[in-house]
Length: 389
Image (cartoon, rainbow, N blue to C red):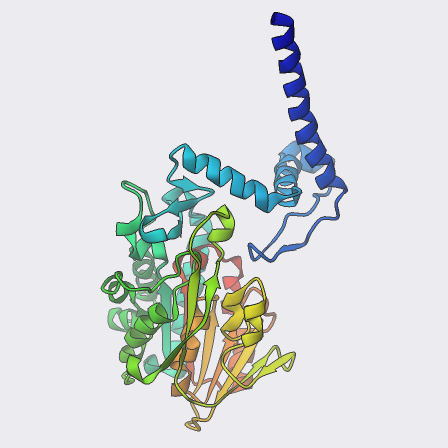
């Protein structure tokens, strides 16, 4: 009996080792993927081996990430891991909270914030806003630092779930701006949409499986922005609302790959005529929506064709007003809502753009500026240094 139990343990251990090493070897011999369409991010590649990298511990850390990113059957393993941890009663897995009403919300704690990078970013933002306020006038420059779902939908988080206080972000920028402009000007330049969204937190203003706000969430932010500029917001009932898809699984879902209901993507169409030029003629659209993207993994790219270095939106409104939007992907749902106020909207993504801001402003005859980032990316994006060019 003892011998049989020992033999069974040896066989079990052998199978486990064969299983683990087999998958590891398969991962090593399989050609590495550069990009994960499901997660919408670039994957770690095999790090370069060097004595210096070994001594600093950089090689080991990067190699571990490389193995994790390139592991064969990675999506299936994520799903299995999620099921096991949920059965164990965990409320957050892979930095994702399993919140009320089917929401998957990215976990962001104080310790996750790179304070050194944020110190740099807020200085660059303040410098950028002050510069173009002086050049274009206070009535033509605004910034929206959009709160993420975890901050606005706190009542849906698990009990006592920690979350970074994003309400401090607008305050940080304004305090720096006050050293360059007056207190009143600083307050006007940074549009605070937090309360407006909190007031609508019982509505479908954030996707349940993705980190973006919905078109409805973007509309409520648009209202605050428009009023801050003295513009009359277009009433919500004057937009034609249509559901582009009811089968959208976003970036947060892909971190846990669990069994949840999909989101729906609703488009707000103001009935105007628009032309969209992506990356200087790389692709052209006769609509603010790229319907081909509904057949791709990233259905959110239906808004303006997704992440691109430079996008020009031309409307039928010949009023001479040209808006520059310096942005992350949160802007993609908002631009179709505000585009009718301008003859042209130029969107730039600093992650992909190599032109300076002054060159963009001069080349396109920009009259107005909007800086629009979500709170999470604005604190961590190392490309914001390009605002100073």
